[in-house]
Length: 383
Image (tube, rainbow, N blue to C red; front, side, top):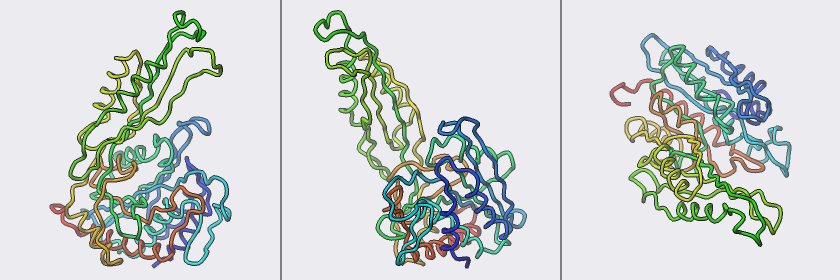
């Protein structure tokens, strides 16, 4: 098997703060091409650096199996969050200390992509088609990443039967958790207009803040649901409150707030947006929703059993099937085919001195090789 530690080092050494382009994709292409993959790289977005429309690079690589064979896809992202200050070493200089590999992206998720590459080297091409769906825009706005890849795949006639996303799903030990779904996400921006004035003459002004407080109070009191069989309860959180007022004796001209709702499959982003908009309007405000993704569930069945069996064979653990946590690009890929997420321990993702246990990299590569091999022989009626 190719050494996933060496592959991970090569990816970490190519800085790729979101949105990622360039060297890190060239590095992955150099890994996949010798394994027989046809690699397609393209860029979407034409805005300035730092804008939501900034250029994003994507990569789709495919190694075709025999005609009519099954198609299994690995998916993930090469972009990483900014490293921040205070690292013990250069975050883009892969460093081994003891049995840990340190570097930004070691866990989320260059380590997993390295394990994927090592895994496919062990799967004979005549077993079936394998592809890589890799974006440079998962940690950012996600406007020109996986969604653009899905459009590319549809245009080129590539249709996976099953997909595994390598997000770091494990909690305490590699293999203790697999994600079979995710809650949806909607952020809603609330604005209330008023009339600026002197606090000593309130009758000459219109204070927007009591209206904003009334909106937020009603929203905060909502119980959206109590959860379902596979999903925890939906939750609404107030994440920002602002007023453009730098003086203590001025009634502000406006007030604003932002809420974030993570919701289960009892709701849709649209239904929740309509509910919040009605409450805002009742108190004299306006609400603008931005839906990041809808909830989805890959019902437990042959695919989840296959993944769990591969995990158990290498770790001895029976993974918990879960839908907890934030969103991922699986929210887009679920429209293409059944999708499951499984990857490394997530304790240090997005943190200073991010690190992966080197034995976990090797074990993950073996697990991925089992999953890919077994998925390619899974009967259509089972998946």
